[in-house]
Image 1 (cartoon, rainbow, N blue to C red):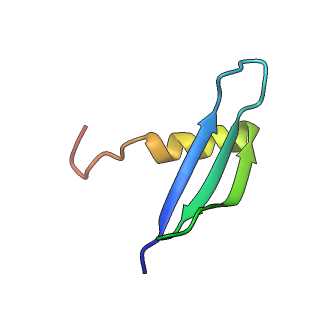
Image 2 (cartoon, one colour):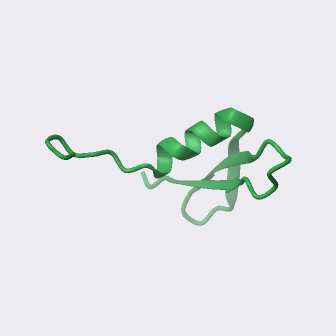
Length: 59
């Protein structure tokens, strides 16, 4: 099975809470939105996804 997960975020408006949308793209099919997050939850998930984890023994 091939499964691609797509994540889109919008934190552009500083007066707004921000949003994260998660979609699934299967071969030869359109994107299906499977979840959405907003506010602090969206920001926290985004940071987890884009922050590289340090390898063991690295500073």
